[in-house]
Amino acid sequence: MPDWIPQLTRDGSYTFFSEEFGEAFHSYQGAKTEAFQKFSDAIDLQQRAKQSEIKLLDVCYGLGYNTAAAIEVIRKINPTCNIEIYGLELDPTVPIGAAPLLQHWSTDVQTVLESLAKQHSYQDNHLKAQLLIGDARQTIQQLNHFQADAIFFDPFSPRRCPQLWTVEFFKLVAQCLAPDGKLATYSRSASVRTALIEAGLQIGTIPLGELHLPHDWAQGTIAAWSAETLQPLSQMEQEHLNTRAAIPYRDRTLHDAAEEILERHEQEQRSSTVESTSSWRRRWNIK
Image (cartoon, rainbow, N blue to C red; front, side, top):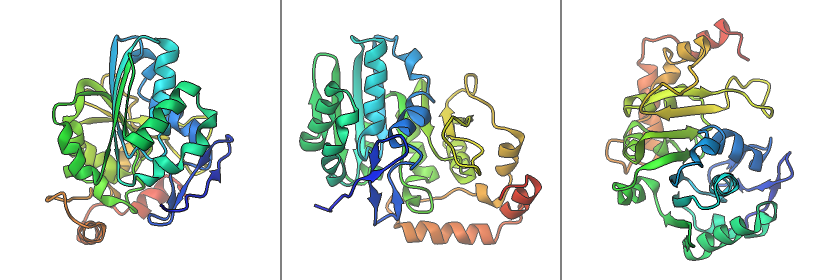
């Protein structure tokens, strides 16, 4: 098993750094805080928790923080809500390695996450959870019956893990989204937003919260079948979708390697005649 070394983040919680992808699993601004702000809070989970049942899909489960935050929010509001969760994760050593870092979650949640890490499943009177291990492009195809009220979409960044940010993969993800469900992702990338639109979804922005970097203009993106309850994109964000940065990643076979997807994407950008992203940045004085 890889030697996962805890990395302290600003809110006192820990994350891991992936040598394979060259990125941390969470923002160093606060790993636990990010799970609430960019995922549970962003899809209005407190309001949804008043329902008698909630179904969640956690794409790229990782250390399990997004699932943990959701369970804590729902159980605080409605302890008898019936929760069903599917998590998709490539590397089973990550949730196992995270076991010593769970002390900042409630005891109940620690029990759930430890069971998911070791047995890949958990069940009690009001919660049923399962962790599917493998390439998410394939494992998600086991869930064509599942209709999630909320999807937490949390892979490594598009440049590091393009295979999970393609139009084709988002179409599979969208098939798992209930008619009134919402998808939340930390990414504000124009290519990601375009891919979500091509998958048939409407998009909105996640406004900046208390913790953010100086160059940030949004915490991420929300997607749903209807734009009615979404925070509209700013003029700057709308214009971002008209630049070369908005050309989406594609993987028509759902088996291509990251290098193939990146090369194809770069070729499409080079041959594009739409506005350059650098021009858009200058116009909006973005460093």
